[in-house]
Picture 1 (spheres, rainbow, N blue to C red):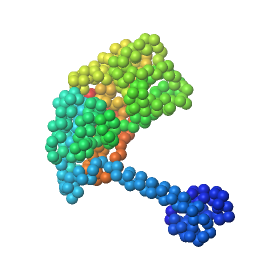
Picture 2 (tube, helix red, strand yellow):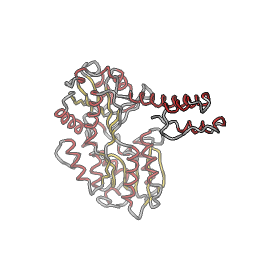
Picture 3 (tube, rainbow, N blue to C red):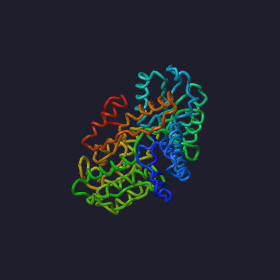
Picture 4 (spheres, one colour):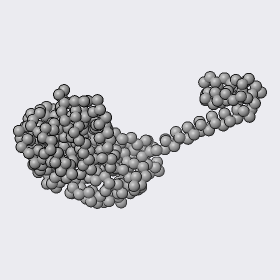
Length: 415
């Protein structure tokens, strides 16, 4: 039964119909409506427009549904016949972001687990030999001509630099899922890649909650580092953060500073404002720009030492006087991350609150999404966001234990 109540109501409002009201209950079907027209009680021409409008609306609606059902992972003709028959076919490449990236061991461990439970596609782990994005591009290009290459899960080193290569892979029928860092291809192709990682609006909400939690009932003053409107991800965090703090009057925002997502600029702003505002309670940064890009190729342990040195330089001796205190001398730092290089800063009390993620589920979710698309390319693409958590000196050890479990490494507080 297809109701035409809205159109019938319009028809009844027509002066021609003043003496021949048409029933507008939901039970009147298209067939019933035509029978009513054939009865001779109304002028047939007066209601032809109603029929045409109703049929057009429903045709449009059904057409939209059919078009949406075709938004899938890729063309059905590209499916490996072996997968259609339930046999094992081809391989999915899982690519990490370099030998010194802290997530690389975790990604490798997830691949190892997947190899034991996945009967359909081989899953292979790849890691570039250096931290330079060209090494990651070269690695991908080395797989292009392999006829067994079916899918890709990748933690991009540089989203914009990798976009053209990923678009080329997609045109060759490779199913792609990006991890941790989303990749937009609006400027080089059409559509988007599936993404498994973080909900940026929720990161902003959690940063606001971490700030409120740290400052307590007495409140305090903060300065906010953001990246303006140039980067949609950081803009989402920034908007959500401000919205979440709208009704918390105990939190006073001295300044909101655009560092343009640049590490050097972030450090310059912190140095300058720390000298001018010595009573500041905390810096809240939408991402950990101030402590990024420090000796990338030195390894994670050396990187942690460089981070500690910069932290002391930015905040002077206040770092050491505030060790282990909930509210030490000088401002503290609240940001996003949860990576090993930040752990000791949390333990020392400099990083009083840290919004982190359950990184351990990212790779496994990405592999599952990629294989599902390989087996059924007509299914709709859906992003997946992992849960977030707020880390403090009190629960740091529990988080480190989880990290070690995800990476299948011995538990240690050292990066």
